[in-house]
Length: 124
Image (cartoon, rainbow, N blue to C red; front, side, top):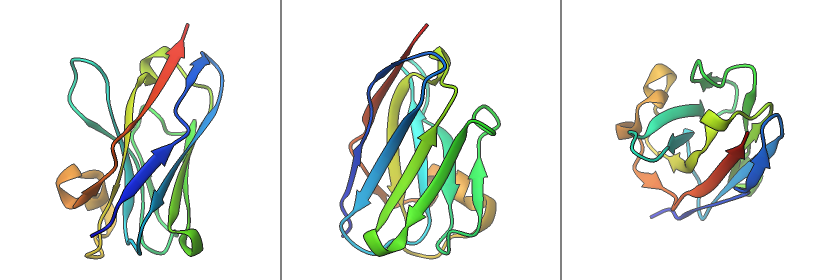
């Protein structure tokens, strides 16, 4: 069993930046970030594969967000720049331990482990 703990969510003005962190209690392979805004379904944001060599982004965040990982610390990060009010949501970290590769990392059902979420609010 792997526990995931997110941190870094906050209230920020549009155009600002935040860095989310997700610390895992054990070794993980693919990791991803998803978000859910009020009244909307959970959506994919970004993912990184086991090696850290491949990353994937939703079109809405490409060029503004960057996912990275520190495998020695079992931690994944989401650097969010040029934030917009539409980025407001609860952000969830997810992890899998089966070695999922490629575009499958965009699918929430590929992840077995989920964090509790961290709130990001972007004011206009």
